[in-house]
Image (spheres, rainbow, N blue to C red):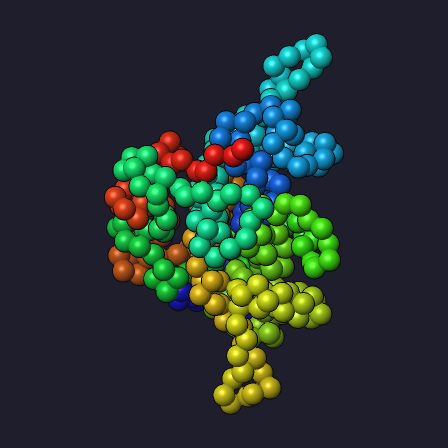
Length: 319
């Protein structure tokens, strides 16, 4: 990715430091229960009792997550019984539009995460009948898109501080010695589940490599930055390398595993711009260098090369 807005470079004139659409998207979706509830909902589950029966989740957490999805505009609550009162939770257009994010996550997890507490069967494209690994392509020219194919600058609502996700860590601990019965998207939540980890990985995708540049760009406390960089190295998202001219300085570069996470970020950015967009404009202005068009990503079947649609995808049934 060619980037024109690194630390110290130009950022949009900002009259407020309000979180932008991308920060709000990560704040809303950066929770493993939320992602798994969306997965169930995309399979047609709507009733509280059915969500509760299928998930090892307390009533307090389930109620809180469903309320958050309603407040965030991804679900609508509809009463289907008055005595006693009972409601169902139906996906809104914004909620249904999260399917590319879930598919991108599913694809990445199947490739890079060997152990799950749930099954990760293949994704089947019913239009051609194949099990697939969807690829990220340019909506304009149809070519496969890689990180280095984009020229990206800040858009009107962009900026380092405005793009730090809202909220705090919302995943259950997976440290050794703790008993965790389920971890639904363990690899994804290493980034998605912590606001600072997602901000650091996002900055790395935009070309930030030095410790001091991460700190200056994101405004993260030094001790917390060191902790998150260590965690991302342990999770094989970043590699640490010494500079030849300054062996006491280190650079942090995305690993192959980290670079392969790009479709997840691209789908999240696209969804945030479509459904949470800011009045002043997008967070990023990206150009697909090979065709010269404004970049908008889509997922394509790696067998028949058709653009994927939610109605043509079978995403592993849930027992």
